[in-house]
Length: 501
Image (cartoon, rainbow, N blue to C red; front, top):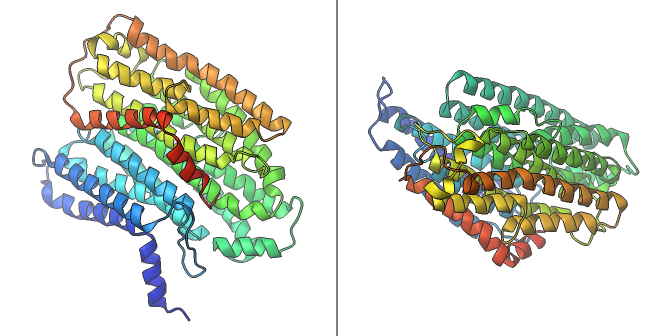
């Protein structure tokens, strides 16, 4: 008989990387009021200390990730709400890597008197992202998703407090709460069918229930879960908050919303849909729903991005389009005879997407000034003349978002296309065709930005920036984008061997 102490010790050992982030955030929240005066005055350079502490916590978490989780499977327990497997290993590593870039991006963008709260909220959010993949129970999974959402509201409010920002935060808050309600409603059906919230118990219950074909009792939760997680991915028709929120928040908030919810959504999709593989509901209901949403999301994201002149809104619609690309792989995964697993292609593309999108926002932070804000496409005019290094880095990220070699974005889109095409069905080939057409549409507005930087005369002078942290973030992202094109095999081999998918 396993004692409660042994269960507790086993559970703690499974979430050590997340505990490091949470404990560090709590230290920041508790210490911050003692370092800032009642009138809001803080010692000069305080943000550097909090930024350094946050980076130390992320690096320590990265070390624990490398030693406490394994890429090729792992242990799970009926007694523990946490599990360690390949999906956990991948999600943890990607989350910490993205977190390091976000910290560098935000280093000089937040005032000293708000640095502790901002970094603390960021750490809690990142811990929640990792916990989404770790959770082995629906209740804990929902709590992990809320651990992502709630600090995000606070972080977005801290970054900007004008009327536009408050409207953006309110929209995101209300729609996020609505998506949480849909997810809980879907979970309640799974509990009602199996009598348990534990993932392994639910899977065993579905296997022994005798449900076959398309169980009506599972159709509703499947659609509800797709809708709720579609909000996380900003997939159509759950996307309409994104352009306004991206425009109303800071570059840090926009970068966070562009990358982190994608990781959360994909991890939750893979984890939850693994429960339903024992029935035909995914093949007959889930896959067609994801197919339709993927096509509409790609079209809406790319077409509306063509019409944008505001950089933030353009990147918001770009994020929507890439949600459609991710959904291509998730839709294909429901056909298990496909020679190239869709989820493997999704995970590879997710890593690439995180690097190239975070890199674009890091560039915008690097160029941004209080007296010269980068807000419209025309603000990038002549950047190749005023700041050739920044223009080159921006072009690399835009080529990768387009899907052109020699960048990792080319391999990411190619993997998704081949996964859809090799499924061997007409629906898969139609999906691959839609993806190819939309990638061509997306190339128009990405290359338009490149043309503006290199062909148009400078509209305004761009001072040489001394924001070293954000430039380090740019270099890190560019290294990943170019490096994964040159040597992608190590990442693909790890992903291909993930036991969870």
